[in-house]
Image (cartoon, rainbow, N blue to C red; front, side, top):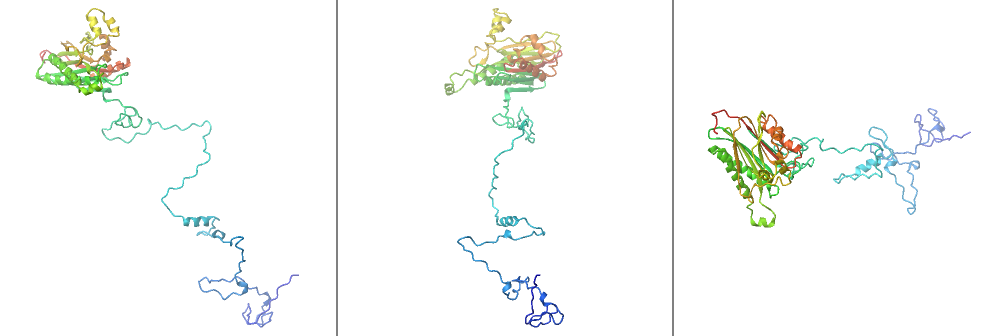
Length: 458
């Protein structure tokens, strides 16, 4: 059987049960009979610091002294150290922390915030690929993108996407579409006249020009003017020539008609004014011609119409034309001008019929034009007094090449041209473009209304 430890009382000790003094060698308390042999051995754990911060407990005996750490040879291994992670800790809520929580907390306490950018994450060794057959995302179509907020008033927008702003170089910021130049397509409408000009489908620029206006005669009756010019492509700066001629002729008529000048004489003088304006373009400095020795004088053709006081006046130089088309189509349509061209000369001389002459490759070579190198200038003018209402079609060869015969032109002109002159001009330009649009196309529509007897001046 196992042996139990027998402990006897020492001198000066007291009974654990009643705290009565004991005699040396007592096995039982004389007062309460407590079995001194069952007294538990004293604890070796003695606190060194009291909980309230007071001095340490009485000096420990040999059983409560701290163990002496064994000497370690520093040449073999370092002295062992205790880490904060070796101690159990808890959160403020009472739960246990993960083993690495204290290390992370300690590391976080040592971190210092700086303005340096965050470290770039490591690139993955492999990138995920889409599943076979999965469609790749399509890039956004700029044409379907939401438009920018409403641009300020006066901002030029793209004619293609209708939302992008146009750069000074003529291209859209949004879709990159090249914008048409100002003269590539022009339209103008007044109360009694309208005109449309288009670059066509083959030319890189529009070398046609027009001018329309209205004024009053001395008796107060209205006078309506339409001027159409076609730049000669083989000449230098034909677009400048046609623009200068149309403006000069229009200004001359607006000055002459209110003074009472007869419309036919006013047309003659306007053509001379247009010729002077084109001739002035050739007056370049000698140095400019030395750098461009192959340049020739700017040149253009001209045709104009005046409707005033029941009179219809036309004037022209070159191969631009004027046609008369009655509203009710009961009377015949007519061509009011004769071309200054090789084909017209052949027909006039009786050397070819009209079909043969205009089938020749030389047919459209002009024999009359406005320009410093033109032959002797002979403005053509004519006056007519129609007995019914109709419209005057004033146009360049970019239109009549697709409706050359009088009946062809009459069929192409809409029936409501007198009421809708702009629409009529647009339809005729479209007719030329549908036919091929090989040349610039310019059309002016001048309605003619019959004046009752005794009204106006003839």
